[in-house]
Length: 149
Image (cartoon, rainbow, N blue to C red; front, side, top):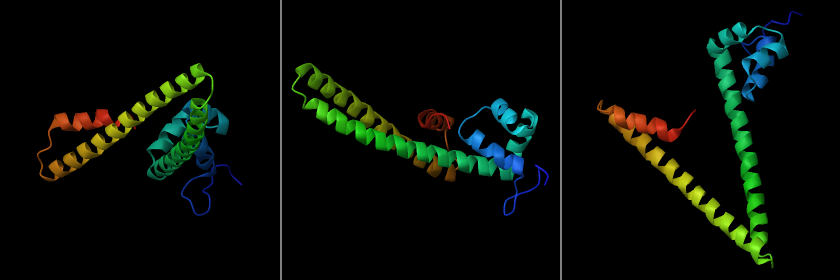
């Protein structure tokens, strides 16, 4: 069987299917090309194909969701450890734990506020675009607030 035949139930070839996991976890095009024995030029071409690009983006988003879920679990575990450290009889340890908790809480509050403002800006831009009067400044602020995609 040829290595570049289309897989059943998917518009992708075997080689394309092999490339997806590498790309989705952030491997470089050079690494991926070497790993599956195709050229980087081929990978660039595939990334412009709608079916491949859609599956790549879907898999990349899934990988990000899994990583986020794992980090949330670790955050809960860290909070428990931090809470126990705050009860430590050694005042230096309990003080450092309390300082860490305060700093971490403040950062979490800032992140939540930034997310809330981004949602508000997005809603404003969407409503304004519906009225065909969106200002360039607001769109640029939204892009900056949402960060790299």
